[in-house]
Structure formats: C-alpha cells, structure tokens
Length: 302
Image (cartoon, rainbow, N blue to C red; front, side, top):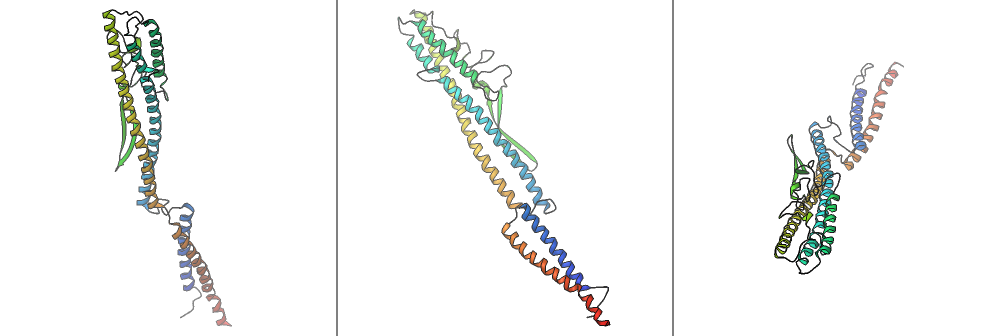
C-alpha cells in the first residue's frame, strides 16, 4: 500500500467513525438526561405529535377532575341542606307535619303549637339561605339564578373534535324559596304556603279542621317533593364520584400511553452508553495511531 503525505485515508476513516460514535453518544446522553427517547419533533415527528396532543388531553382531563371536585362540593352542600329541611322527629318538615297532626286534637292550645311551627319555618328558610358554596345556591334562588346548571363531567377528543360532557341540573327541581314565591316551600296552595302556615287562630270547628287537613296534605306533598329532590342530588353525587374515579384512571392510562411512546428505556440506554464510551476511547486511539503514519514517512528520508 502506498503512503501519502497529503491524504491519510486511515486517519479519515478513524475520524469519520469517531464522529458517528460521538453523535450516537450525544443522543444517548440526551435520552438519559431527559428520560425520553422522543423529546423533540426531530427525534420522531409522528410520536412527538401524538404525545403532545395526548398531554394536552391530559391537561383537559385534569381540569375536568378539578371541576368535578368543585361540583361534588356544591352538590354535597345542597344535598345536606335538603336533608336537614326534610328533618326528623326533632325538626324540619317531618316535625312540622307531626305538629299539624297534633293540632287536630280538640281543645289543644294551637297558639303554642304555632310558636314551634314558626321556629321551624324560620329555621328551614335559614338552612336554605345558608346552602351556598362558591356563591352558588340552588335552594334559595333569585331572578339572577340560572334555570339550569351544567356540571362538567368528562372530556374526549376524536380526531380534532373535542367533546365536553356535562350533567345538567334543572334548578326548579331543588328550589325551596324563590323571589317570586314559586319554590317548593313558598308556593301558595290553599291560601298559604308551607312557609306561611299559621294555625294560631284556628278552632275546633269543622271548617278549621278541614283547613288543618289541607295543611297536613300540603306538608306531605312538600316532604315528598323535598325528599325527591334530595334523592336526585344523591344520585348526582354518586355519578360525580364515579366520574371522578374514571377520570383519574383515564389520566393514568393516558400518561402510561405517552410514556410508552416517548420514554427512554434506561436499562438499554445505560448499556448503550457504556458501549459508546468504549467505542469513543477506541476511536480516539485509532485516530492517534493513524496520525502517526505521516510521521513514519520521515524515516524513509533518513
């Protein structure tokens, strides 16, 4: 083989090999430092695009999870208040009904019974007014209260079209008091609403007994309506809880999917790093040996 002073083929080959090894080494080091084999679009445009879109979807799912938490707190507040309004033997509509039945007794002091009734009426109204979470109250409404509420419950994307699911609630189903007296407890029926029932002036006469019977019927209807509203919110609570668990599970699934696309296999990268470092050291030595070939040409002229 001829020796050339101007062209050192061995050195050129060694240098090219060393460049390739250094490039692969840099790629491996980047994967190890970032933990990803697809960190930028230049690594793998298709996978990077998919991963970016899925990360955006996961961010949207995280917002849905937060919204579900807020919705759960709101629904729980309203549900708790409705349950308190239904009451039991010591208060609420249940106690109010028992007082009206007691008032049917001939000769009983209905003025004293009315004192208890008034306290219960005031307490129920206060309970409804206090059922506010984050400025939202479905039990004591005003003209500014929307007719329906949408509770964000899900997010999905097919192609480039996102879909946001919601649980729609009709507020009239839960409203106990309204500014126009159209709620379950302030709606006038038979001359009075549950909120304004007054038996202090009633007597044992047949007409007054009929009025008391009407009040009792009105209370029974109110109890059924409020209990139905509470049951409906209870079902909504369960749905929100189920959706919350599903969204969290879905987020974990998406995270795992993205990881399978772009995460680096650290075991493989560690092995590759050691091999490339060894190749780099050998490449440096090979280049050093090749560079010495030009020095050997000098011996020809001694």
